[in-house]
Amino acid sequence: MVKSLKSTGKGVVVLPHGVLFRSGAEARIRTKLLKDGHIDTVIGLPANLFFSTGIPVCILVLKKCKKPDDVLFINAAEHFVKGKRQNQLSDEHIGRIVETYQNRIELERYSRELAQYNRELAQYDREKDVYGAELERYGAERQAYRAQQGDYRRKLAAYRRRMAEIGPHPPPGVTIPTAPTAPTAPTAPTAPTAPTAPTAPTAPTAPTVPGAAPGHST
Image 1 (cartoon, rainbow, N blue to C red):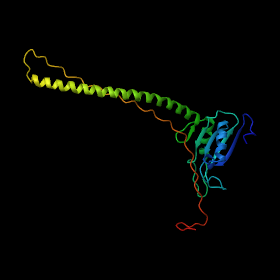
Image 2 (cartoon, helix red, strand yellow):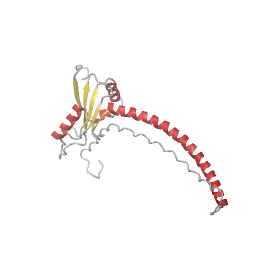
Image 3 (cartoon, rainbow, N blue to C red):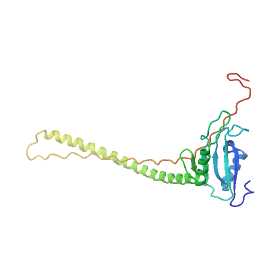
Image 4 (cartoon, one colour):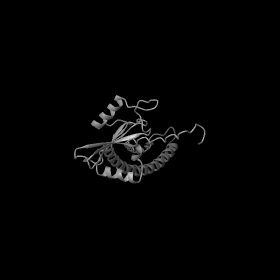
């Protein structure tokens, strides 16, 4: 399909969700398509949409030339009108999918762009490095603080001994010592927040064995 596309063309294929997870040849094909920049969008759809099968499916939008990490994930598997025998996508559900795809919109728990996620992940890695350096600095400051605490306790003990010697009513000419100041504890750095990864599609449900009665083995 990809070979038959024009340089500016698009291809759309409906596949079972398993192609997104299975190993072996399918995993190698996925990797090749991603590295070559041919996967534009992955749209997860609900189960039981088609008469021929009840398993959930996905739509892959393919392109000839695009950035390898610019992949949009749309998880529409939970947005449908439930029917007795078959589920349906309403005009609203379809419109939301189309609008999200056309405008590359990111919505919480619905759509995520891989390029944006990678940028946020890179930013998170940079913040994590800064946090690691600040954590080392904090550790050094904590050690210095403990040393200051020890010095403070010694000065406080000497101050209390001197105040006991002077008594509650010191005689004229006796200088009252100044109480030592407690050291200030250092502030721990705040850890960075990891970005939210694209929502994984829903795994397919195993079909029911024909003729099996509830509670009985066949």
